[in-house]
Length: 445
Image (cartoon, rainbow, N blue to C red; front, side, top):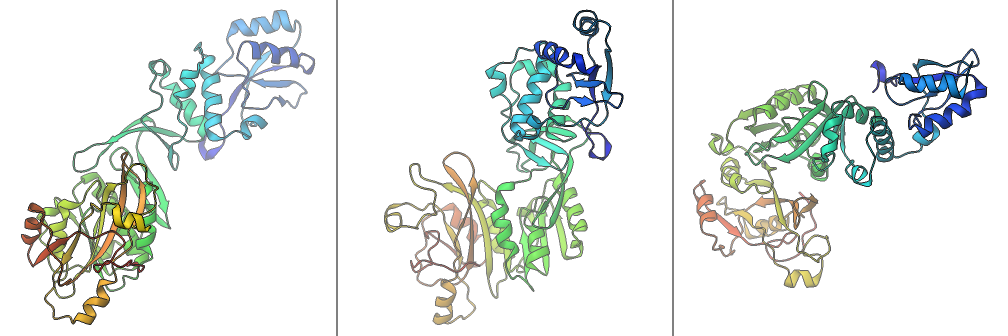
């Protein structure tokens, strides 16, 4: 573990005279007590300190060193307050260092190290400040249970953190509550800085997705001055904050029904200095009373944000329409490469496109030429990240415009739900990356 101020914790060492150093080293190595993470240190009085594993050196080993290996010589136990990492430890990757330290620590406690235990160690993790978030598929062997809680202190020390947590699957409870267990530490609040924006949240109550960084950077670059945004699934502010801090929207209506996420969202709006430009609507967004107000609506919910489509259409401005940012998992088609659909002539002709785009038949008197210019503004979808096997998280941002001449798709209840939200709506099957007339679109909104 680290002491306050980030300094390394003291380690136990056995002190002897230089002439006995090699004997001591060989004995400690044979007994699997030598701490290879730290260097042997020459003390001010000329003696030598050899770091050992554990909180102390058992008396039987001290007796062996005094009576048989170096009779009459110096043999005392001390603590190195500022231990120096060994060259081997400095040259290891974090995963290698974790394996080295956990294996030696476990062996010092009588555990027989095996390939199975090594394979059960994590190879990757998330780090939020001084908190390490492990995945659910590590430390599953029953033997680890007998080594807790000291095991987590060893893990924390190896990777330079003070708290350790392990995540499970996100709960399918509507609030996307993460199943995170705190293994070391007394609270789960962390701070993450992303594109200059500070996010504070409790990892045991709220999720944070690193995979949506591409879309967060994209929306942050949009020119949104003078616009009003409705974020239907605001969470801790994943997209609300980029729109406010970087894209320059005038005002955001942020909807969220997870009370823990709302607490974090309030903090994040305040610490980023944009609380005066956002109103939080706590509760089910399907009951939202707003209408005819938004220039943009963000629907950042996966695997599907379809339940939010009717309310998204309800809040859009009726005089000018607006833009929906739709997040959804879509099929990735086994055996195909991972480039976006429609990128080759063969794919354009033969690959199915399950995504459906909502279009608004506005009645604002737009001319045919203006309609045609606006039709070409369909947005190129962004590939996001791996989701469940066979699926990808995709983001579509589409203008809601008057698209005359489009045949309505026979999609039954989906269309009925949209019609029930007010106005005249139709659902058209469009290939992602293509405009309504079937030509490739290059412009991004």
